Image 1 (cartoon, rainbow, N blue to C red):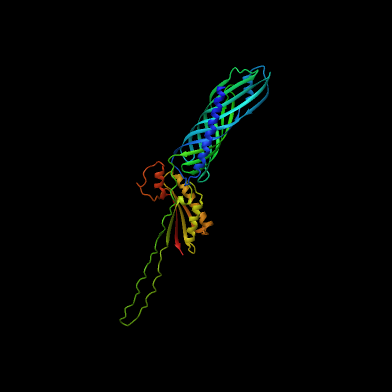
Image 2: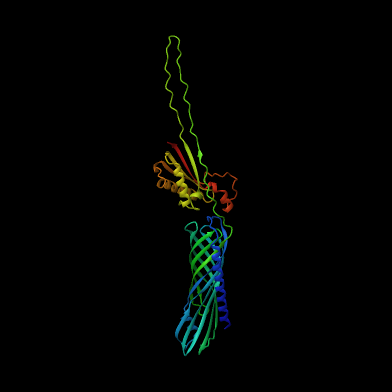
Length: 405
């Protein structure tokens, strides 16, 4: 009986912790939103609570506890309970992280009626630790999908008691065993330091008596608190550089000598004035046009390009070159590919929405070959919030226009 009371006391404690988690969600949901682009690794901690659904073979477990000579006439089960988890992790990159946690999957119970007349009551409780590899796929600036594959080491305890003609000779069973676990989820970042997850996980565990295995499915809501994440720097549009046209003065007129006899030689017509082609360069910060590591123009970027095309209304150019540039973080090949995709995206938008002539626009990816920052301005090679902020001017898209008319 002491074992059963202990289980019910644990159940009360779990429900109290769940209430505290719900209150925390309501308070943190009011935090102001911020830009969430992040490339540097960071640690995090979190809390999770939800509903567990156990899938054990209670018929086999009851038969083992009853022994020979007993017939089970009916079996009822309660296989749902509250589960919670406390975890910490390290986000190694934008897409992969490692997570270590302690979990309590609650309990499941069953009651069996037998002939000769008697009854058997049993409970199964599971706690343990897990180590997961978590893969994250960003869907937008705030939404991301996740999948996890890991190993868990669980302790399963089974309690049994009999009534009537039933005497249980083995009332408590314990088993410790390692098994696999998997999960899928969806998360939303309210701010750089607060993320909420909704997940579905499956734990493979053993019962405490027979050694038979079963699954425990858990649907949960998690609060994640990262440390050291930096918000995306504010969009910056570089100043427009204007080059004044050069002017070549015509030569002085030539007059023929008059003596003798007086003959006037008409001056030749002056050559036409030569005007050098007009050149204009406009720079757009990559953070203004795109999300981090993205080549799809976001709403703020479309608004910036719309204002740019309005300024060009009534003006035409012989040639327009769209150049994409990145900072020095990442490989040369990756940066070149990203800058080429971004230049192509800007050209497509200028043609489709800005009504510019596609035949006059060409694109070019420069990668990290033409930085704005100078050597020594931004020290370090490891991506962190300070270095990313310092290299922000290098991440840009330039539009170069020549031959205005």
